[in-house]
Image 1 (cartoon, rainbow, N blue to C red):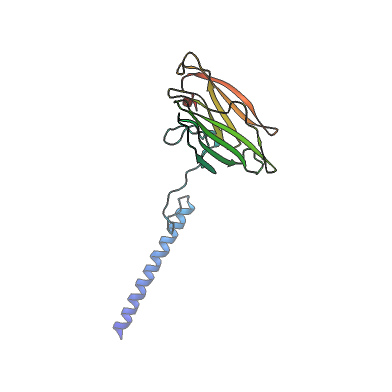
Image 2 (cartoon, rainbow, N blue to C red):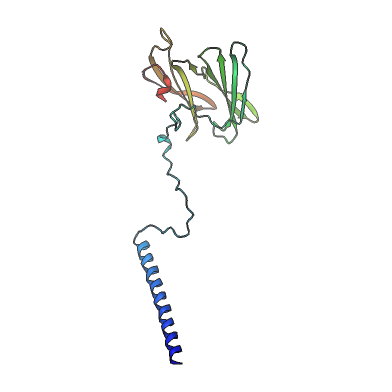
Length: 214
């Protein structure tokens, strides 16, 4: 009988010691957290924390992660390829992007058409249309197309949608040859009274390929 009582007392002491240890651990963790330490990872699902997005003014949209130029238009709502003529000329592709460009909550439309002429001087033509009560109205400024060759690009465009829509055109004049560098100019377009108008024009530098300036 005495042995049984001693075993019970020993078991009770062990359980009490375990409870005291657990309490001390809990108290220590609470003191650590209240002192400013990070929360423990107990019960968290493994994963990667999303990085903090930079301010819009710090976002570089001129190139992709691979270092290639982008015009800012991705994931078209409609895309189609076309057959060129026997000389390799004609409309090669058309992409349509349904985007709210003037901030009125309605889906407007940007159409990008690739044109080939059988040489290395293909180009993209852009068309911007506002959705006004279901009717699409063309508001494209003059000269909204690229001028590209095998050596250099003389004109390219880029579209920025945040914090508000902007169209950026960087272009330069042709000189004695296609690859003769000339002064490039950056022109920015924004909305004013429902129209896309030029709000800024800035000379940049003498260069051959304007793609390098985005």
